[in-house]
Length: 340
Image (cartoon, rainbow, N blue to C red; front, side, top):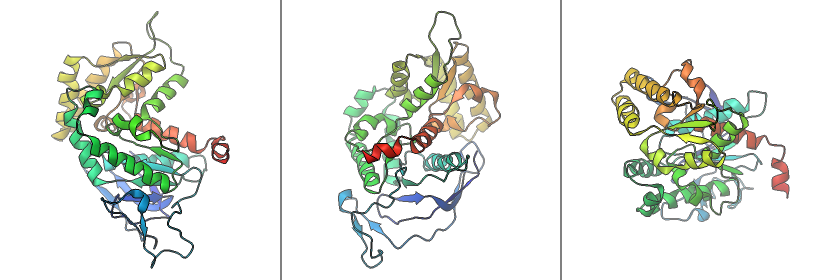
């Protein structure tokens, strides 16, 4: 969808977790599964001489810096980036979606001549495996039941990433991943910087849109379309209902005959079949007088072509998160926040 360039002035090499820092020079193209190619292409980037090394058994508070290669003025406790609008990004189930989010930060933040946002991405293949394995386990569980299962390693991993990003200079942290948000409250607890929630970003944008009910005597209705994992977590429902919206979910028949088959078709690389089923799923919600449909799934986010008229009735949480992140970074109150 976006064919932009990112420039990288800073890069570090880590044994764990893998990450990169961006302000420009990294060129890449991302291809969603809805396109024939499914590759992510990187141009080789020569990293700086500062090398952070951590082992999985080490606490992230004890990062080792190679003394032979680090600049003379580099201290062990120095943050990698010191700008007040530095964004920390925790990668999730899809590395491609994480890079797509970063590309949006670069492109959208510079549309009005603003300097690209400084950011740090922490993308760990082990975390992606953990989050991917969680998806199937949530099929019949409520959020609390999910958290009662043995997912402590996932929570610990997310907390470690948060601590790492804080120490690296991030002044705001985001997770462009639906599954990761199941633990958002637990991960953000004790975090010393703002930790944006995709559900809050969606609810805030819809509230600011000043939508009017499509049926007299009813509240504004918002549809939420996602896989069972995200629907079971209920965080979109909770955030939207807290803002006074009536949330409409696909019923069991719609899930069984449209949403689930759409994902199955996508996995078979039947793109046209998946698109048609997604269109039906959206239409089913629209006929129930919803104003907007939240496409809360990585698979659904880029499945429809950009010119599809149905997209005008949809909102993508990851896009809302990107817009809210830029809004935070460009806020007039940002400097005051960190000076007090």
